[in-house]
Length: 189
Ligand code: HEC
Image 1: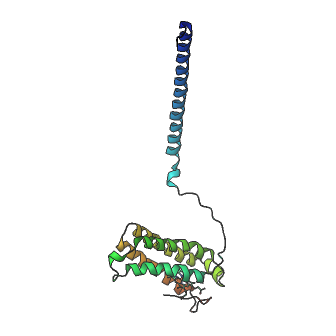
Image 2: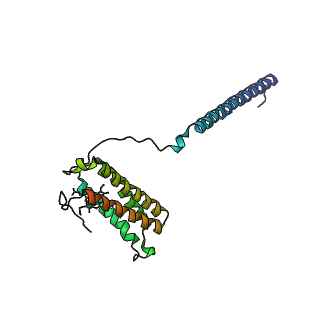
Image 3: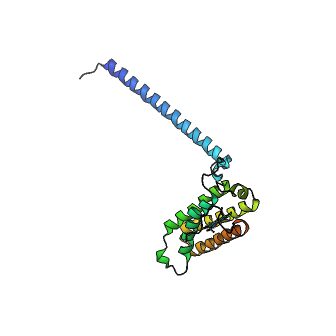
């Protein structure tokens, strides 16, 4: 198809204009992005948000189960799995590290239940004691250590974590545990 020379000139002008304005738009976007990045860099440089843990919301509630039940059904089960694994008679090849992680996490998560109390007759009284919370934290720290050791396949670390766990159970029991469980649930192992 033949194009009239004047139309051709118009078309060329149009082309130049559009590519210029496209270039302009492109330049504006680049400037904006660079500017935005600058702001982000400045914000993240001034704000130590990265180092801060994610915000937590504390919602008080009372579990619908007793501390006696949590001890038997969750804490004791999870702890025994860890203690059995570090038994020197247990061959290293038999250690199931992933299951160990899961049991350490069960102990860590039980902290909330035994900090909030529950349906047991003494639960509210126990959780109000300062030393109760100290023992709970002690068990939690030992369980975090067990989790780290499981994740790094560190049998020696796991063994000292389990010693610390036993210590936390025994110290708390010595001070708080009645000789007969309040609700009749006892050691299944
Ligand atoms: C913060 C205190 C505290 C810690 C820590 C604690 N317990 Fe307990 N535990 C208690 C109390 C109190 C009872 C009695 C509950 C009841 O009778 O109502 C109990 C009861 C139990 C029971 C059931 C009663 C029995 O004699 O069989 C078992 C099993 C048990 N705990 C295991 C453990 C193990 C294992 C650990 C450590 C990994 C542990 N507990 C850590 C306070 C604690």
